Amino acid sequence: MAFAIGLLVLVHIFIVLLHFRIIIVSDEPQVPCYFIFGDSLVDSGNNNQLLTKWKANYPPYGIDFPEGATGRFSNGRTSADIIGGFLGFDKFIPSYASATDEQISKGINYASGGAGIREETGSHMGDRISLDRQLLHHNSAISRLMLLQEDITFLEECIYLVNIGSNDYINNYLLPDNYNTSHKYTADQYAEVLIQQYSQQLETLYDLGGRKVAVFGLTQIGCTPLEVNKFGSNGKPCVESVNDAINFFNDRIKPLVDELNDDNSDARFTFINVTSILYPQGDLSLRTNPCCELVDDWACIPNSVPCSIRSLSTFFDALHPTELSNVGIATRSYNKLLPTDAYPYDIHSLARL
Image 1 (cartoon, rainbow, N blue to C red):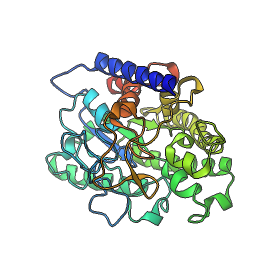
Image 2: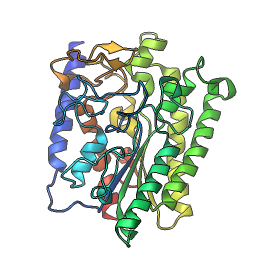
Image 3: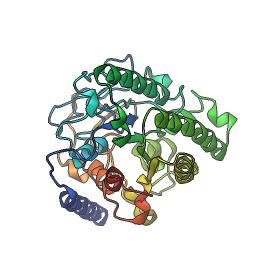
């Protein structure tokens, strides 16, 4: 155990050093705007006013965030927040729920906790904004922009981040009492069904002006405290059957990116391989306990006191990374450390195209 903790500390120190190495402050952002689509991993508060249990707008969430509990499912910044800083944006990209006309030309965060590629995903816990609905919101935002300014061709130079799909497993396929997908499909078939729908959604984003699109793969969900506690792991760090199901989906994203780029000559889609970033060379040994006390098996108990040294925890609650883990994800998404981290571009290269 002491060795494992020591290894985790060394990993975090390395991430922080790399984080400081790549930050270059510039007068202007590297791209004119930055749009974020996804789920609770990148949500910045879009669920706050929804009738839902998918919320994180209470302490101890946000304990290390400058604005406190904003609806981010972490103790601090999300990976999307950190990438925005790397791109040169001096303010956090506003949520769709709060964005003003003056802000939307710089970007919007549409992400929603509990959301999925599939419309029904996460519905057992209340409202959430699916990816289809997020794209509708983006279409509405473009209409607002067209009223504010005549030329919106700059949208083709912006960065679009899409991080979604985890809930289509955690809060759909892996809940057979609530959803029928695992009764209808094998894990391989389900991944194909998801990818086909995802492909259409990413084509819609292209039709709405998205050209530089970073598509995030899924983490090894079988290594989260929630899934380990739920299914058991036979003494191993992770639930192998869950990760096997996830990998059917992840293995299809790189070919999807190639297809989107081949079909659209001006498209620059890229795959961010979160599994490579968090579990280099297949090392699945760094799972840790949640930093906060839990309610409903995954969320932090409102106003509870989290662990005091959050830099030693990979997970803040039973599903979501701590800020330092998000720094690691964002850093290697922006500047890839290994060739497997991003294909064909990391986000820094994507911004320069």
